[in-house]
Image 1: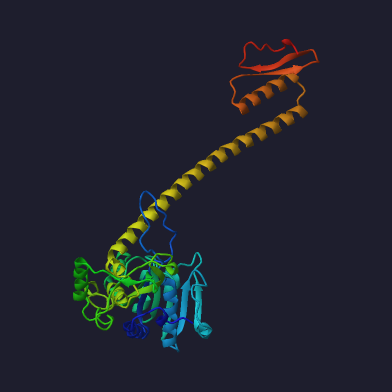
Image 2: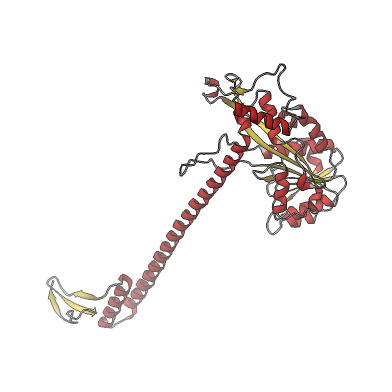
Length: 400
């Protein structure tokens, strides 16, 4: 079974994870942006640089397993739409109860209807505006609620986003941790080369060092070392990057939530990985710019897909309307033909039958006028019925 240490490359994370899984009540949120349809260039817009799904769902499962390991007596209730949302070790199966969300049952009804057991863990597969009040109420009543949210935000921005979804500042007293995750392309270990650090780069590094003095110098190599830039080699297909590495942000909740910062910010985490030679210096320094570019590209991609979906829906609607009109026309034709067939069986007056056939044919064909000829022999025919055609005199004989 995977452990959190399989994804973390920094020793600082071990202590934070220990504190996190030691919680016995409150709300723990795993945040990240998971898989999206591939962003294709459109309208001159390039895909977001180094866009990778965050791996949030995997970290969520790993975290749940570590929480259950840390609380061997706790029972857990999983509230989800999909029974496969969690893949936990067999030893946890007897401690799990599953509540599947199917209409008319909603997340809100399911969460509010659960009895709070101590110790107990409530696992909700996704956090939305609809179930946020119920999840916070359960956390405030003493349950440990673990959930995940799909978002580009990380750190304290996730807490502010929860307020936008409808949580009050008083409700957010129940928020214990926000664990944000993102994946970045790792530097190729075969062709990485010392980076050329410009004066602007130095100013950026000094600014980061001033913001995170206790974190950022811990991973520099002995003797100062060097930052690295991507090279080119067959192993990475000349991209300079090979594989990916998880980047985390640990935010601890508490009083004065709006003023707090992450205890391990994602920006500092990225810089520490760059100091270890796992990320390119350029990727670390451009992290925020890449975040903005990524978010903008996702919004543009979503807008484009919505536009394409709307156009496809309009086309389908037009096709259905045309098919409906055609079906109505065919239905009228069938009814008319059935009526004529019945008339052929029951009517005895040939001229009245002819007039009926002409009127029906004109209606079905949407014609202005019509005439029906009765072929008397191989040599001649006779006008049996006519409508809207003055020259077609009924009874008039014509050469065949």
